[in-house]
Structure formats: structure tokens, C-alpha cells
Length: 259
Ligand code: SAH
Image (tube, rainbow, N blue to C red):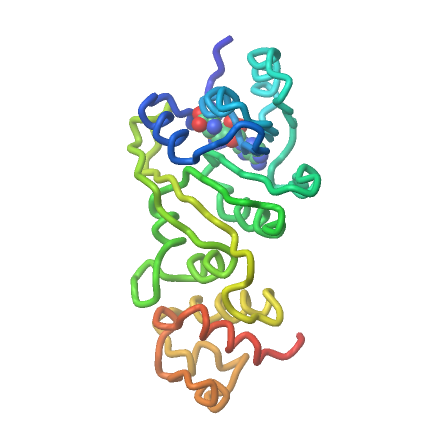
């Protein structure tokens, strides 16, 4: 049965066998491990993953694809197909005490909220491997001082250690997307890398600082923190957000009062 790719579901199906092979070799799936795939589509990654002997739960939004997947993989007792929106799916319900390994060639329009949704349950996740726009992977991995360093870098690095594995050219997909893609590995930290009293405060300070990234902290954070408070932390208030490390953002966030 042929399936016409649907733009509104962010469908770009992988068809390059070398890329699929590279993804499967870099994730090192072991028999018996519990994996979750988001957006299996027509099963480009699902099939080789199942052939590694893993237990697999997949979450697919497009009901037509769910029908197609159920038919295609009916011989696989270790596969559970969930017809659901990954943004609303309770991933912790799958974990049954163990840790999940996650993979997905994500719909690019929802990739950021989806990663944060998964990271809300980071304690039950061993690692995640995502196909994303290369631009987004660069921003996730960016370090202070670089142009791409921003809210996404700080917040993702608070939750996990990111690593760009390799790039994937547009021709590897059908239909061909406009942008370069890349595979990123995200390993949630077992212990938070910095002491943050409240993640929502970290998010507030980081969002505020980068919303006016050309301004100095003294100005951009004026409504939240005084210049004296910034200086008292040993942070130069004339710096811009792009020069502030996660550790420094954490100590700034710990100054915020309850709203
Ligand atoms: N993994 C497949 C398909 C990638 S396209 C491959 O590599 O070829 C992205 C897939 O995510 C599509 O199957 C699309 O229907 C699905 N999808 C889009 N939004 C989703 C959502 N909110 N929850 C779960 N799946 C979604």
C-alpha cells in the first residue's frame, strides 16, 4: 500500500540505506533492551531496530500509517504500536522500573517541544537519538561565546549531554526537505550538572537574557535581578547572554523570587 507523505505531520521518510545502516550501528542496540521510537512512519528505522532483537514501543500520530505498520509488523510480538500524539504521550508509563532508549526521525515542526516533553521524564530515559535539522543540533550543542549559543543550548545542556553524531543530506529523504539534517545523541545527566533550585526560574532567566541578546545582562535582566546582585555573584553585568555559562545562569536563577 502506497502512502502519500503528509506535510502537516512533518513526514519526510528516510530511504537512504547507508544512512539507516549508520544510524543503527551508532546506537548500538542490544537484544532485550527496551526502545521507544517516535514517528516510525513506514518503518524505515523500526524494521532494522526489531532485527536487533529489542523490545520496541512506537508512537505514531498518523492513523493511516498505524494501520500500515500493524499489517507490516504483525509477525513481531516484541513490537507495541501506539496510535497517539507523542507530545501528549506519557512515556514514563512505558518504563516499568527500567530505563528507555529513545530514537526518532522527528517531525521538525515539533522537535523542540517534543524533546522538552521527553526531558520532563528524563529519569526514566537512558539516552535519545534524534534526526533533527542540522541547525537545531548546532544550537543544542553550542558553547558560550558562539553565535548559535542560546536558550536551547543552555536548557538542553542542563538536562543532558548532547553530541552531534553525523550529518544527513536532504536527498536521503522522500520528500526532500529544504534543510540539512543531523543525528544527535542526548544523554540525560544522572545528577544535575549545576545546582538549580527551580528549573522554571532557570528557564525564565535564560529566556529573558536571550530575548534581547545584544543587550548587557544589566539591562536585559533589569526586571528580575539588580546589577548589584549580578556583581555579587562574581558575574560581570556588562556581559551579554551569549557569554554566560550554564553554571552562571544557574546561580542567577537561584536569586529569583517566587512569582
Ligand atoms: N521514522 C520514519 C518517519 C519519519 S517522518 C522515517 O525515518 O522514515 C516523521 C514521522 O512522525 C511521521 O511518520 C509522522 O506521521 C510522525 N509524527 C508527526 N507528528 C507526530 C506526533 N505528534 N506524534 C507522533 N508521531 C508524529
